[in-house]
Amino acid sequence: MGTLFFGDWLSGITTSLALGLLVWLGVVITRRGKIRGWGLRLLIAVVWGTALSALSATRDAFMMNGAVFAMPGFQSLLCMGLGIVIYGLGFIAMWVHTQAYRKFVFLFSAALLGAQIATIEMSRVVIWLGGAA
Image (cartoon, rainbow, N blue to C red; front, top):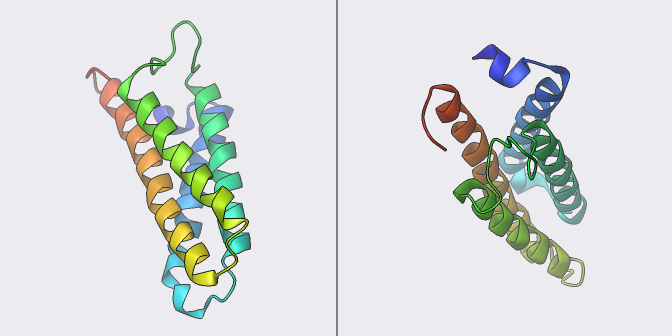
């Protein structure tokens, strides 16, 4: 299974970014009572998640012949929908300057980013074990 996540440089970088994002989100969520400014943290989460998504799509040859996940497939549609929600809430947060709203958006986006990562990586494991995506 190690080759699934670290089989080549792109898989290794993608796996490292995913784990790093999950750890960073966990640290921020754990320290949420001490945090005053949420805007920068939200921006970092969205940019990090976007970079991870792009690398993950490259790793899985998304939208190419032999892609791991089909364009109209469950994983693609779910992650696209969650991404639209994350971007939409983040976009609104640029104009809503209350920290309570930005904190909510960060926490909600963290959960959605976690769901995206879990969906793709668990699906890859299922395929690797011989199951259907």
